[in-house]
Length: 116
Length: 321
Image 1: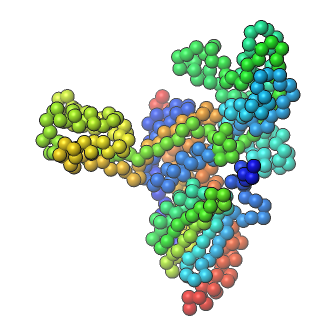
Image 2: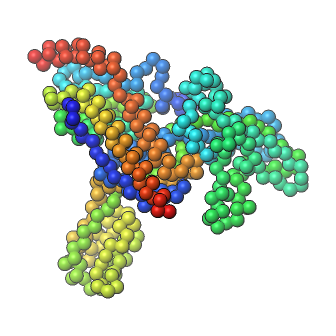
Image 3: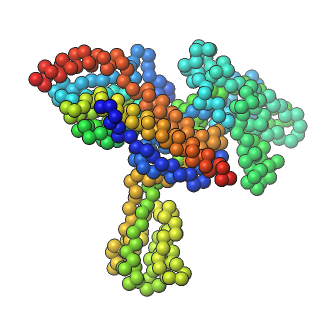
């Protein structure tokens, strides 16, 4: 009866930003990114990719509530980097990894279909 | 900053590839990537399914919404889906979902005039787009052995003499997150590749009978005995279900450490089954593409970055000294 519409889970409402950034007021080089209409799929790969960066001291994400369709990614870096830099780097690296994966998969498909 | 990269280069090896079934290895990446791909395949790779039904005449035994629901669940060939628009962000038709970029129209017109019950099936649906048609199950069945003439599409309703069903349906692009009818996946699973270390010296202290007994303790057939050397060998590592039965058995036999089994943290065995809407292999490619689009959508906008640069640097100096 009072269930939210299904599209609420993946359509960003008008006037809302997909990504917002908030710098931590107490700790230097720490910030939170709020990703609207995203969940574990993006949260977890971002977190794991950020962990590969030695300048990242802390990276974590949370889904605050199952009916609030957003995740919060928190990043804390050394003074050599910044949360924004680490965040951009993680996305770029993941994007390139996926490009590589796509090529690898397509090559493998060609190889297999030639065998048949 | 420049030149630094923490990128990985995953490897793929396809084991088995059929139209609706795919088994492959994914190596040199982590569980988050494997799980992201699995989740995207299940809930975010788009397909086409009937979403709006206008019923003109329905004198069948099933009510209108029952039939509408059944129509929605019929899988439609969706190779076009990746290039189509979602009707909610289609400019050509103001989102009412009636144009060629975001929708496909179907018509169904059946009337029973004989004493025999008439089966209304997915074959009776007439599509406005020849590339978007109900998945023909019978076509697969031909090669599978059973009689193709008996397998005539997906049953929607049965009519007796005098009953009639006439309707118009609009199929739209959608994703599994919205409604499961749009999910292209029947199953998508992955498992860690297991690694076995048999302590050969300890194993040789067992009699042949004890070895057989130990092998039998595994619920799946993972180990066997080499008929020539009488050594225990791993015959099917993937059959192992991480049940620990063989480890418990070894302890019960007073031989702890007989075998050690690890899960390789960077190696996954994927099994992908499709509903027939798109090929299983295409589903993986589309999943990668969708995941790329999702990542692109969460990139920081320039205004956000600039806003931080302006008072961010200054703020950092004030705060940090």
